[in-house]
Image (cartoon, rainbow, N blue to C red; front, side, top):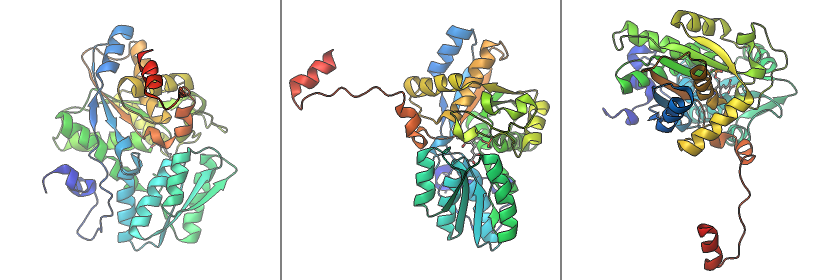
Length: 358
Ligand code: AN7
C-alpha cells in the first residue's frame, strides 16, 4: 500500500487533514496527477521573452471527473457522510457540480446544483445529469446562484459543498503537497487561474503547511490570473455582469476574495488579468505543442506566465509550476471552433494516400 496511486489522496495526507478513524472516506482515487515538464513552452519563453526557466504543468484535468474539484469534493463529501448529512447543494460554473454529483452518487446522497443557464460547458452539464443530480438552471450568473444556495442549504437542511465549506479548501491543499513531494522542494512561482478564488487560497495554505512542517524550505510567489472581463480582484470592485469565453471563471464576486489577496501579498506575488485572446492562444499552444488538452479557464495560468515573462516579472533560473485545472474534453464546443473541417475522400486507398502525401 505504499504506492500513492493506490491510496485515496486524503488518506495519503491524513496527518495534515481533519480525517479521523470516524471519517468514512468517499473516494474515486482522485489526486496523484501528473506534473509534466513543458519543454516546448520553455523554448517559447526563451526565444520570445528571453526567460530561461524550468516549467511544469500540474495537470489536474486527469482527476476522475476531469477537474481539480475532486480533491476538495472527496473531503467535503466524506465529512458530510460523517456528519450524517442527507444531501448536498452547490452553485457552479460547471466543474463543482460535476464533481459534487459524482461523489454524492457514490455516497448515496441527494445532490442539487444551481447553474447559470446557458453558460456552462456541455461536458460538465452531461456529467451532473448522468450522476443523477437535480440540476436547476437560473436566468442569472454564478454569483447570484451562490447567494441562493447558501440560503437554500440553511433552509432545506442540505450541506453546502461550494468552497465556503472549509473541507473543500482542505482537500485542495493536496495539490500543493504533491508538487512538493514530486519536486523535493516548493517552486519559485506558482501560476493559477482565479475564479471564486478557493484554489489559490488552498494552494497557498498547502504550501505553508509543508513549509511549517519542514517538508520544504521555501514558499512560492503566488501568481493568480482572472479573465479580463471577469477580474473583480484586479479591478478592485464587484463585476455585476462578468464575461469571458472561459465560463469556468466567469465570476464577478469571488467568495475567497480576501484570502486570495492575502496569498498574493504574503507571497510577494500578483493577481492580474489575461484577455480571452491570450487565454485561447495558450489553450491552443498546450494542446498542439505539449499534447496537453485543458479547458480554456485552465490556460489562464499559462497565459499569465507568458504575460509575466513578457513584462520581465519572472527571474531567470526559476522553477515554475502552472496548474491546469480542468480537462479539455469538458468543453468540446469551444475546441471545435478551432478544428478544420475533415477532408472527405472516397473509401479508396489511392485517395487516402494522395491526402497523406499532399
Ligand atoms: C477549470 O465549478 O467555480 O478560483 O463552480 O472550473 O477555486 O474558483 C470552477 C472554477 C479554474 C477557478 N479552473 O477556481 C465551479 C467553479 C476551472 C474551474 C477555476 C474553476 P477557483
